[in-house]
Image 1 (cartoon, rainbow, N blue to C red):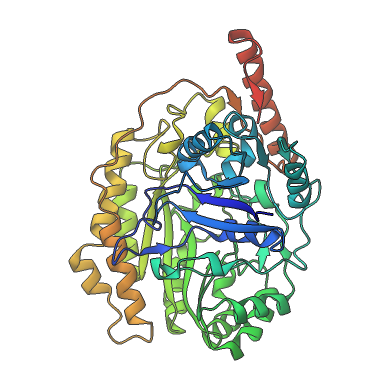
Image 2: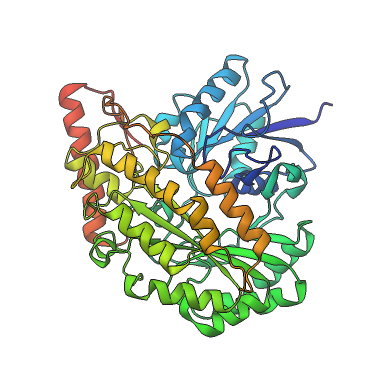
Amino acid sequence: MRTHVIHLVNPKTDSLTTRPIYAKRALYSPLAGLLAVAAAIPRDRYEIVLTDENIEPIDFDLEADLVGISAMTSYVNRGYAIADAFRAKGVPVVMGGVHPSFMPGEALRHCDAVVIGEVELVIDKLLDDLDHGVMRGAYKSELLHPMVGLPMPRYDLVKKNRYFNSTFVQTSRGCHQGCTFCAEPLMNGLKFRYRPVGEVVREIENCGSRNISINDADFFGTPERPKEVMRALKPLKIHWQAGVTSKLAQDDRMLELAAESGCTLLSIGFESISRATLKSVHKHVNRPEQFAALVQKVHSYGIMVFGLFMFGFDGDDASVFEETVDFNIGAGYDACAYSTLTPYPGTLTWYEMKRADRIVSFDWTRYDQGHVVYRPAQMSADELCRGGNDAYRRFYSSSSILGRFPLRARRHRAQWLLYNLLMRKGSRFGDNIVAPPTPDPEIVPMPPILPVKEEWRAAVLDAAREAIDQDLRLRPRQRVLG
């Protein structure tokens, strides 16, 4: 009997981190989610074929029993096109990932089934339905996975020679912060769920790589748990990097353990140098007056700082670009990424802007943190586009790179240069255009997990009801939730 084949596909997206730049290699592999999906599928029943369209073409003639597609908002339209092509050949398609989880009704116009949120607790039901020819609709667990006993991600499926960073290890899910522009707490919850440290260590020992990216929303999320993990990492003699928030990155014992266990880089979501702006989006943990000292403290342990900043908040005017870049260069950030605020469907920022009628475009391909899809409060959309591009040009100019190079520092110079050259080359988009207006979507997004705060939960539900009521008056029976 022929082995059942499941074809997992990551659609192409033209982003800084996933676009092959040097030697046909991309900075990061976007496959962590699909590797977890593959791990949950029984090996004795299914053969897995994995395709990342960023680095290779899709074989639409592959004989598969099921195609699984994971998509974020900026490339979900490409995911829908792929799904349509496979279904036209009679192959059933299931979709998952952030965007289908927030808008399953939209996704179901292009696929047979949608996994909302985490896959591990619904995969058995989905595959059983597939075997019986009745796989359809939404699959969502009423519980969140306890993070105990997760199967080993299928690293054997990754073409590691096509990425500079290909191994992502998850030690927790969830995030305490609840930033209004972020989907994480509405996808994975506001409480951290931790994997047993021994399981994390076993994964790293068996992943086949000595360079690891920790794939948590906030690895330094609580005071003691990351220290426990880092103590366990010390004997492994690996190099690792992680995304963290700023508060506990100031803990000297935390940084000491990070350096001793092989940390080379911390990506920190600073977002803005304005305290008022940070408070307005619920990023209370950040203190801009401490940012420069924090960068120097992290450097003192031989660790690089990758600063993540965002433009387009309501408190931003046209001066924000020059002020931010001047600060970043003066403080000696090793690398920075500058994104445009994007009201992702289903986030609190989305509902706030939608209610105020400020969202102009619902073309998901423009939701890439580069285009402007809404009306900024204190500048034009063109000014926001130009300012973001100018920020990249200034920070990654030759003079800036030479001036920031860690000539006498303990930081990893080869890694530093690689990141700066990749960001310098990859950020040359030309002038990002303002997204042209589009009609409203016919589907109302609904978060997989409603906000904990009562006023936020009410805002989401009220906005959804308003959208439904308005559409029922204009286009009866066409709009559905999620």
